[in-house]
Image 1 (cartoon, one colour):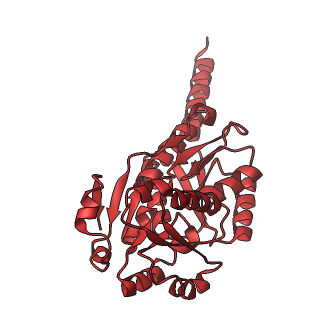
Image 2 (cartoon, rainbow, N blue to C red):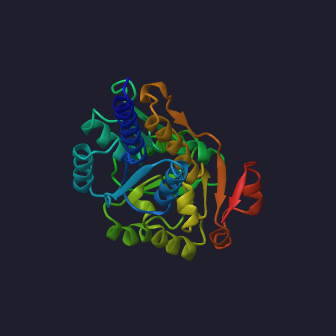
Length: 305
């Protein structure tokens, strides 16, 4: 082979190597779309956990807030469906249900929600739901409870479970439905004066009004029992649940596996079951219903804020 051809082949090899290196080095990052139904502390913690798990990957994370508006939520879903998004992560049951009903061709991780893997092999997720009746059963001292909730479809089954629990355990349950955040102050002020506690669920609308709820709870010297860590961080007296950031971390690890080539159908839907008692120290001393002894009798790991 002549010197010319040897040089030419070496040139072609070097050119191919440089092109390959360029493609490897400058490959576009994977894109992850996170849909938050409404911004509040729990959502912030979950998103932080997702980002932590994906920090070492070349991933572009886009977080969108639906502001508790179904129309905005639908617009965000359509936007992500049309865009070059590799993976979609809706947070919460309502957001997850809407995303899975409109998107069938992209991997979806339902964060803090149940996922229907049977109808779509591209869907998996992390469930953090703790039956509220189970939490109440650990607080038998509470016999008269005002439940503040929104008309969210997600909340309806939990309200039914609470009614069943109250009937079986001779607990007086006062249900107070709130349509909008503007209605919250009047609604809680009109709740029965004999209530020993306010109880809220994983209800995005109600959780965003923690300060309003706490003002009334403090006036009555009663606890505000929440269902998530974020609400306790923001002032609720206590909650039994799992750390919100850990939900995000677990969801982020699933996202990492899928972005690296794992099939969503091969990843089981994970349930978070390491329960913790979250207590807000400042709020706890402003109520006169549950004592420190009552809290310690739960015999659970406690995190104080």
